[in-house]
Length: 270
Image (cartoon, rainbow, N blue to C red; front, side):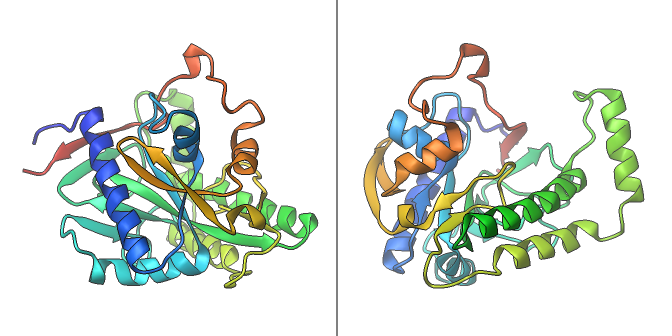
């Protein structure tokens, strides 16, 4: 199989994002660029030059509709939406829109084989008070940390003693722990699900730190350029990026930090 270059991967993801955008328009579903993709749109009008993924978020109710209907109503046969609903062994409770013409080897201990994908995260209600939101995210971070242990893969690039700890934790973990943690995480994330956004919202299924966003930032959107296309970002993007990256998010990081954060290889199937 021929390896997919990074530039080819980025183009494949961009075309998937265009398909996702059109599907959401056709089915009246809300979405927003988020994470590094949002930062790239605002700061670079496209990919962050050293980035290698695409992240989008959908209000929980729209996300639930999307995962139920996409695979049945999609127009492009090369794309498939994968979440733990379709693949119970998937290592996250969020979903991924996958290009099925490719296959990927990730640094994740999972039996589910994916191809080039874009991450689709549900935007969840966290509560109407800061106290509620912090309590919920603290509980969910504990689940995330346990899930990370399940997902870590023993790789030669990691120090031997760290691999030993990972192996020991996996050995003594309860059988089926990952499925149980994914289910618990999903149930907790959906506990305030509603057609209306609460005062505080976030992406707790994916967050690695406490990130409290404001529901008002997601009440509407604006369309901005991203590479040769244009996509939706939240109207309160400035507040979002302040939470994700701090007030100086428009400044480039030091050269030594300008590097990709994923470890994987991708091949075309044919």
